[in-house]
Image (cartoon, rainbow, N blue to C red; front, side, top):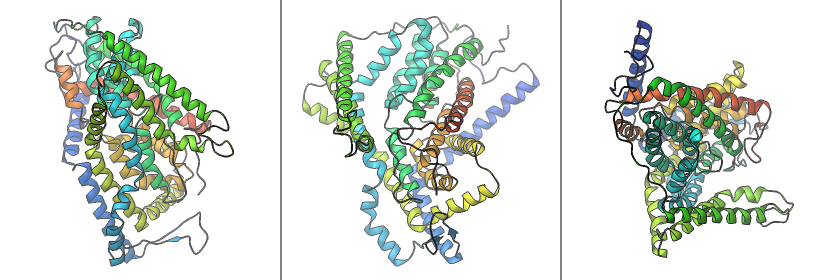
Amino acid sequence: MTDDRGSGMGGGTGGGAVRTTGPIRHYLGRFGNWSLNVVERTGNRLPDPITLFVIFSGMVLLASWLAHRIGISAVHPGREAPDNVIEPVNLLTGDAIQRILVEMPRTFTDFPPLGLVLVVMIGIGVAERTGLIETALKGFVSWVPGWLVTAALVFGGLMSSLAVDAGYVVLIPLGAVIFHGMGRHPIAGLAAAFAGVSGGFSSNLILTALDPLLAGFTEPAAQLVDPTYTVAATANWYIMAALVPVFTIGGTVVTERILEPRLGEYTGGLEVEEQEGLTRDEKRGLLAAAGTVFLVLVIIGWMAIPADGALRGPDGETAPLLSSIVALMLFVFFLPGLVYGLVTKQITSDKEVASMTSETMASMGAYIVLAFVAAHFIAFFDWSNLGLILAISGADTLRALDFTGPMLIVAFIIVSGFINLFIGSASAKWAIMAPVFVPMLMFLGYSPELTQAAYRVGDSFTNILTPLLPYYPLVIIFAQKYEKDIGLGTLIASMLPYSVVYALTAVPLLLIWVAFGLPLGPGAPLEFVP
């Protein structure tokens, strides 16, 4: 009997992304597969992000020369004459080339995201390499009651953005194993975990390494308009935390009401794997780590809550606390990771701790090179005045077209999600987009924090659809353990409902947030007055 609910995965026979029962579905299936092939071919032809930034930097240099020759200019709405006329600066003159070469080390070392991310990663690296994050994920999922398993998988995936690799490598195959052991379709468990880990990427109840990373790109982009503007690592904390229950509920509903009925009963015949429980040392380590987190938070509260606390300003303001978030994140991850390692004997000497931190920094090599070329790309945009001119001109055009308000935010989210299909790195995309869109939307009255939040929404829900996601081959391998014939199209077809639901919930939530004037994070405004 033909099962119209999907891809043949219910009977273990594999197959394409769509089981056709009529001409309309047939052509929709063909169009969907053709679209995915176009995305994959186009994305694979793009250079590495590092190469892209080198190319873009060269284009900015040439554009600065051309713009100077043509004599284009723009009028800054927030400055008085004659300083309000912005003209391009030719970066191919002798003086400009000298500046590029003389200031090259400082341009790199002063790049905001560099120090912020490396500091946080020291703490996260120890927590990850001692096994704390992996054990915490496994323990959380295994301790919840059966009726909450789906929600726990999605929620655990969302929280795994604390250490993305752990979510992909640990939670996604664990989701399939748990569902299989419960007599449910393993692909549904894999999809639920994948939806949390990747589809809800960047949403979390607590700050992650991505928060200071993106803020570090947003700040210099905002300073093209206002040189004194600062963007805190907590800029989107509230809205990203609010997305967690939304994505958890959405992912649960899709899994249980859409995907599992579509997949049907699993008859693949694979023997149920016995799930390994936590060892006694792992349980003791988790309790010790939890106690350490509590103690660290108490100390932070003691320094931050009283008006005369060590993390308060002279008049009781919270600016020092917000500026210390990155350093505090180092201790919140490092100390529990250290305690867990000592209890579980993953750490037996200080040399092992030093080795873990060194390995973490070594793994950041590609990011450091990316930061070098991205820093110069943004600096060239700043020095040439091209970013400012483009932002003013773009804002004037949008204002003339009366294209502002909620539709502008939605359009920007759609653009972010579309670009995400071709460039997987969140930081690489934002480094390219921020110098253009942040100033442009600032001139339209939108704060850099709001633009960053809209970008994060668009960047998240298409992750599970792009075949260029680096972990996609790994997820397919996990799935093929249960369905040998499962392929790219089948997996994307299974993940599409999650993407749609996440988009249809996250975008309205952001618009409602803005409509009610709620802060995106501590002290993060929604509006900007040019």
